[in-house]
Image 1 (cartoon, helix red, strand yellow):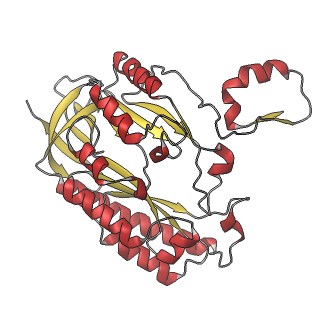
Image 2 (cartoon, helix red, strand yellow):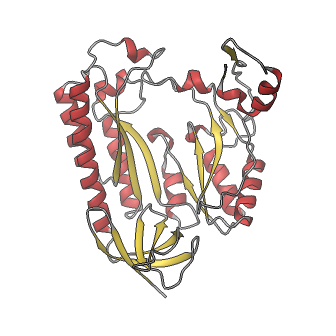
Image 3 (cartoon, rainbow, N blue to C red):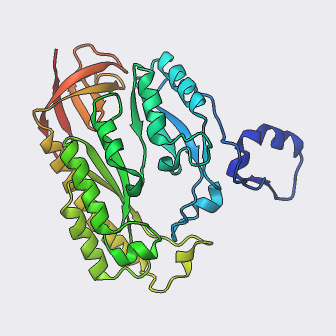
Length: 342
C-alpha cells in the first residue's frame, strides 16, 4: 500500500505508524538534495558472518547512459570520516577480522565534503588507527585509481590486494555511447600497471554485453581485449533497457538471444581467467580468515585470502573467523587446495 524511496528507509517506522489503515497505494518519498544527509546505519554484529560490510558512500553523479542509479539514489553523499573510524572500531571489537568498504560510487567518497577528504585520505586515517582487521574496497572506477592508491594497497599495510573495476566494454565507440570517460587503451594501461606493481592482486571486471549498437565486431573486440589482460575474474551483465535512461532510446538494440549467447561466451572466458589466476598462486602463502565450520567427514575448512581466494585446507581443529597462514598447493576448475603453515 505504501511505496517509499531509498532516501526514506530510516524513516520507515514513522511512515508506517502515520499511514496505518491505508487502502489506496500511495507514494511517500522526499526529494534528494545536493547536500542531503548520508543514511547512517550503526554497525551491528551478524553471528553468521566472518566479514563485515560498511557502507560509507551513497549516490552517483556520473549518469552513464544505461544506468538509472543517479535518479534512484540521488547525488553523492559520504559518511563522515569520524563515523567511519568509529564504526570500524566497533566492528573490530565485535570480532570481525575484515571490513568491506562499500558505496554506490566508492571512488567519489568525500566529493560532497568541504574538508578535502577523499578515499585515499580516509584510507590513510584508517591505517593510522592500526586496527587489527584488514580493509577491502568494493568497486572502483578506472579513472579513480592512481599510482598513489595502487602503492597504498600494495604496501602490505592492511588494505586487501583486490581491485574490482567496471570495464563495461572494450570497444571505444561503445564506451562513448555508454558515457564512460576513459578509452580501452587507458584501461589496459591501468590493469597492466596494477599487475606489474602487485602481481598477486585479484583484478575483477564488470562487463555489459549487448549494449545498443554493439555489433559482432565490437563484441568480439571486447572478448579479445579481455583475453589479453591479466585479470582474475569477470562479472558479466546482459544489457537490459532501464526506463528513464538515455540508452533505452538508442537505436541498434540487440536481440535477447544474441545477448544471451554473448554473455555465455564471456562467462566462459571469465572462468578461464579465474582458473589461470588460481594457478598463478600455487606455492604462494596467504593469510586467510576461516569461514564456517570444518566439514565433519573431511575435517576441511575454507578461508578467504586478502586477494579473494577461497582456499580449503585441513582444519586441525581451527574455528570459524580464525586467521591462518595457508600455502596454495593445488587448484582445479572449482577449488583451491592449501595446507596450513605454522
